[in-house]
Image 1: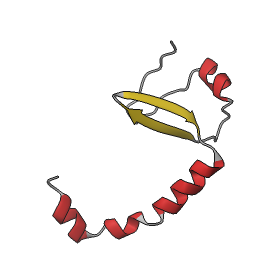
Image 2: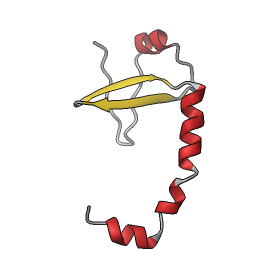
Image 3: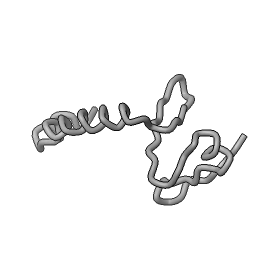
Image 4: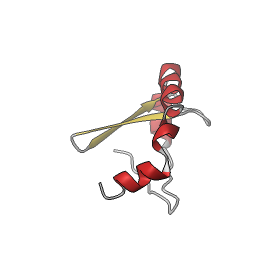
Length: 74
């Protein structure tokens, strides 16, 4: 088991053995999945990045002051 600490900026170093196993290089993106209290991390593939870009373009419609007021207490 590899371990690392989270900094005050909520950043963590990916251990060398994990970077090698995933084929990670500086600048690569990671995809995170949470299921039943466990987290899976994998190297993000181009299709993951394209999906994230497409979804993020639609998020602005949910960022109005009216939305903030309506959903603040949820």
